[in-house]
Length: 212
Image (cartoon, rainbow, N blue to C red; front, side, top):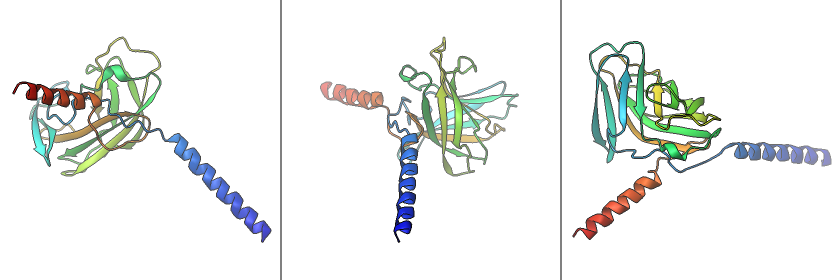
């Protein structure tokens, strides 16, 4: 009996130690660094070697989403979906961040590439180190999650944005985006607006009251 109790206690201690180590490995930030999210087509673009697209603000279930639609012209050899307002001044070097967003695509595909760099592909700020989910499901909302790590040396440029690649860019394909979030650590949490956006709404409401 004593032997069984000792074995049981040792197994319990080992399990608790493993759980504690896993908890320690999960780093949660919470604050959204990306700014002006859920403001329709603001800050979104689709950059291609050749080809065309349109972007539209679409309110769905009370959220102002961005709908990107590929045109009929051939896309060329590369294609990038870009969100520019990442809160560039708030990043630490050599640090992990979690990028998440919801997307509803007209096709099932993979948005396999996720980085923070300039729209021209230069001056990288953060590389992807892990993909949690990159798969879209045709006609359904899917939450995509990536872990990135910032570089150890400050880039010369400060105009980096969210740089997405690898997706199907065929003529007529659509991607609808909402709830972009970039946060410190390696665990995705629910979308919240950036504190700067909340303050901007408060200031706008105050100005409106003062104007009465």
